[in-house]
Amino acid sequence: MKHYLPDWPQSLILVLVFFLASVLGAIPAVLGVELTSVTYALSMGLTLLWAYSIHLRNKKRGFVYVPVNEPRRGAFSSMVPVFLLVIIATPMLGALLEPITSLIPMSEWLQSLFEKMLDTSRPVDLVISTVILAPLCEELLCRGIICRGLLARGKPWFAIIFSAFIFALLHGNLQQGIAAFGLGIFMGWVYYKTHCLWCTIAIHFTNNALSVLMSFLFPDLPVTATYANLMPHGQYIALLAASAVLLAAIIYILYRNYKDDQSIISFKVRPASSGEALGRERAEE
Image 1 (cartoon, rainbow, N blue to C red):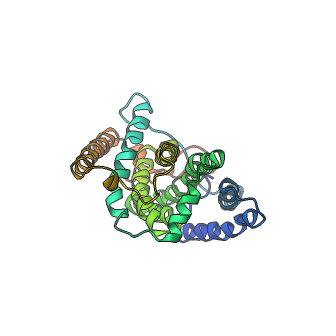
Image 2: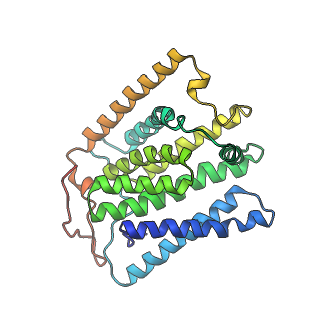
Image 3: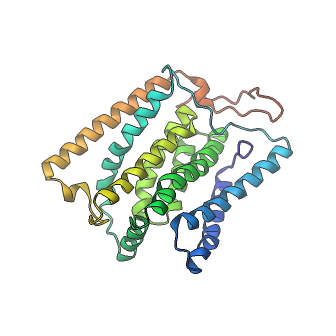
């Protein structure tokens, strides 16, 4: 996909392709094959196939490129500390986003949708669709294609926010969309700093895996349950405070680690014929 650097209108077209592909992806369910993993694989697979066809066309024409995954460790000796930090940050961010998402009443239709998505009676289907396919496919699309394309074209803040908006839009409902937007901003920033798609996949994997794990451990817990419902008020406030402090500390550590690494924040565009950069560097944060 490295030869496909979409701008924001082209990114919106990708979203349209996804929703059109979702209609085709629903065909197996209509035929009686009610497996979320099959529906999701068709919907996202057709979307990524569309993007790959554009990549091949651009490559044939000799278009410039930006690598999808080019991990940079910054001042660390390896990428391991970066992975550990972003994984630890994920549940902290989830806890801080919960008070915002809980302000939105969940309709009966949405409750039914969540219950179906987290149906533990089909554990293999649940794990494949939510824990494996979603992190891999959605991160390739939202960060590896859309965010990368925008980072190569313009301001980092716009690339991060717009790709997070697309990520939220793909979820198709406000309840998930708000949480996805907040998580998407963090993942976009991490991708901007590290140029490592596997870091954002790790964040996405951790977030989804925790939800699935809770479904297996507490199958009778309603999908509307929140930390605020399950914990005494004092403990809940302590959880939010601790999450805020820890998340802020992790973000600061990552920021300091990559602060002076200009090769990270430039997302240099390269000619199709060589590995040399064209010099489109940006030092701004």
